[in-house]
Length: 157
Image (cartoon, rainbow, N blue to C red):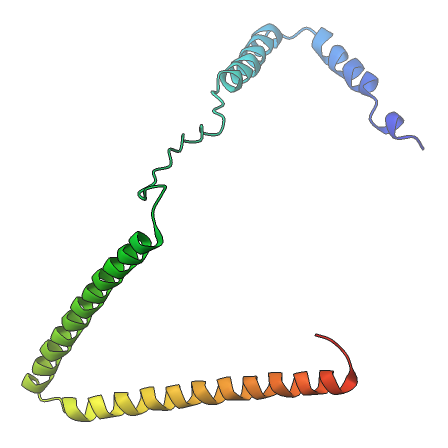
């Protein structure tokens, strides 16, 4: 059975025309309201603004180094930058230690054994570091064993 025979619009249009020809006092107002609703919906959809993707920004590259710098100038710049980074790191460490001191004072004021907590934290960190070293050593041993096996078998990695 062909698909077009199942969805033939001819029978539907004939049925519509048969009902529309019957005398009914509301057929013209209903047709007018239906048409207005359809056309107003289509008009609203057609009035939508479609905005495309944004225009990419224009990038201006700024270079902060002179083009003909010598190796000595580069080394001096790197040294100055490293000194600044060391100062920033030291300031951050001082802030962290000051914050720890404040928390220690708060803990002692509220009756918490801060020294015991610090010992426990140090022990946990030492255990984590030892476990990480053990995992790293095991991985290195596995890689070394794999290389030895590959060399013995004559296969390349």
